[in-house]
Length: 265
Image 1 (cartoon, rainbow, N blue to C red):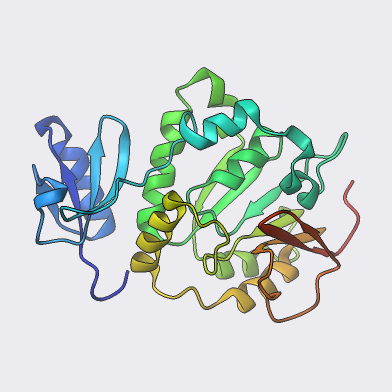
Image 2: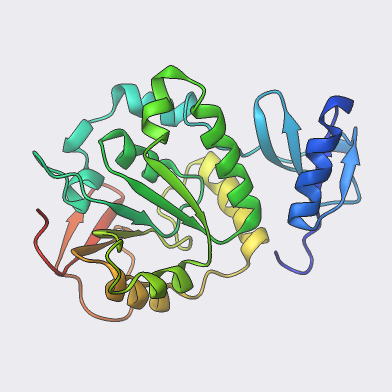
């Protein structure tokens, strides 16, 4: 979290007091009761316990709406029901094909959307996330989705790992449990210019500062992956410094750089 960024756990119902205090203690941040985000002057952001789930909400009268992990509704739920299945670019990038569902480590898990797509296609996915606040959002979203019949089997294939991605990858190198595919989506730059993604990126930049270790992350991923590393990039962005990708898959606004190490399956 950047030095100028102030965050607190917020709750409105007295019944949530113990949950709020436990979360505040876990994250090392204060807890406030009944603070309306639009009128809160003491903190830049509130991590709010709501009926919809745990939500990250900027404060101030003109602040955008909350950010939270929702694997059941919204864009993620729509993609589950209307998406392109194994014909999607992300599926091709990680090597999904008939009879092949690789074990994937998403080492930049964020809000878990790409990991959910891969899990919905049958992959076992480890979600590695180093930012405690984002970890909490992910854990809440996974817990809620596990209670819904449509998504319970999918999130059962998603395993949240609370760790620094580079350190975790270095511990995986050469291990029997090492992922077949390591998936990397560096936070900045990001190709999606939608209002929702802009809102999330602003919040995440405040939380984590500059995301400047993509080169080290790629190097660690190449050491740990058994079969391939997949890097998601904006279509016109340069490749991450280091070895050149084996090949690329391009879409309208983004692309995947694939570093092939060994044939899958």
